[in-house]
Length: 69
Image (cartoon, rainbow, N blue to C red):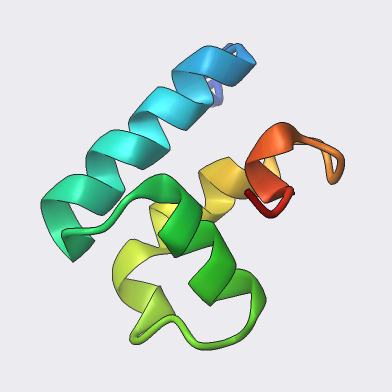
């Protein structure tokens, strides 16, 4: 019997909320700092937060989260 792949449907706010929660708990930093460090290649141990990086990749390149404050 083949296994079905579960589908998760998240809107932008849900994605950002999950990223924010994860960065605060695991990295003790805000989501804006996380995105900035990752995009500049200065995020220490990105494998530790690969799930958060994957969530960020679901957002459009023009998302306000990626714009500098």
